[in-house]
Length: 564
Ligand code: ADP
Ligand code: MG
Image (cartoon, rainbow, N blue to C red):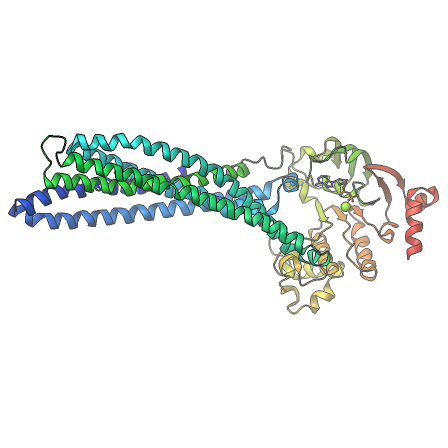
């Protein structure tokens, strides 16, 4: 809230003014009753209705002003926190996404933020305003009659204890509720994204059970929250009833002293009556306060999450493209042993190196280390003799074009997807050239709006092969010295793969290329082939050399040759 302390202070000021006028109501009641109805004082008869109207006008204006100020501050607060979180989402290391489910991350930005701001503004409003009202009214009551006030004070600690117990329970419940809610969102998201797999593999019942169990937990926890919340009112009202009974007894002089005047007693009861709504609000504020604190834990945990380490200070530029892996080893945070073990190789500028090997042998991991999606755990990676750890992430990634295993398309036009990330206006010709080189131009022209066709979420209106060709076009347009293709052609049929293959060969001519592919047709022309197995390079050489060697690669080649 600090950046908006002015607006916030403005709101507090008017709120305090509103609160301070609250005791004025019972205060006016005493002379009103004693002076007009009982003694019929002429001057007071004239002024009291006018005074009352002025009082309520002032109160209305103060109430309005404070509401507007708080609404503005809380809106700004939600915006700021959401922007901070989104910025962090863009800067988080890849390992964070390995460990956190999408639904939970989304829930933080959409729901938990509003809980925090509710606590920061609405709750604060209640706390400040209603505390002032309570203190003001209590002071007035004390001034009016200390015996009655004492009775009220004695019963107060009982309230406080009840409130504390309920608050503790609410806080733990709402923390659990938030976690469960995130899990439910997660199951929901998986069901929507994975509906095809669920249908074909008969996962409906299992998904239904999974969802029901989470949804039911949400219901149970919500019910418990309501139960704990609902038990607070009857408790307080019970104590209030005892209090009023005692007041009548004392006020009517049954303890043997002078009975109070009508005006004074009614005024005291009015003050007491006015005391309950703010106290009730103060008690009720616990639920949004507790869930706000729980939400804040979740939101700030995310904002405080360390971003990708970007300690390198050198800015990379004019790269020729010699890529060197020197005794590189790597392990994922969650993996038991090393996924890569002492990998060393050199890709001379402008040449192509292919990685082959069984699935799980570490090919994708090698590809992810170059743009520093992960940091090596041992050894070094050099680009043009510069340790990539020593350069800024931005300048390193500018040197790299990447097509991954899954083509990522944004729900935008084909043109926007191809030009994604390119600064400034891209000439149409350049975009078309990239599309042509990726063998995507023909099908793009067949789309209803050509380059202006919106591809839908994850590119649903396109086939897997078409999506890949758009991803390839995007990589070609970027025109970076280092090109990484991780099974970029796996979703293509043999025919279009052959086309894309020749396009990639043209492209790879003046660029350092790291290509991962299953089909040997993609690999045979590579300048160097590294055969991977269980995180190690087991064979290396050109296609002809490796076939002559008669090892793993030769077996692989023969198997594929037989199939074809
Ligand atoms: P390839 O691309 O050759 O099929 P990967 O590089 O994807 O193989 O995986 C190599 C090994 O690392 C596998 O054993 C896999 O289980 C593990 N692995 C891959 N990604 C992760 C990850 N994000 N977290 C933990 N382990 C991973
Ligand atoms: Mg892979």
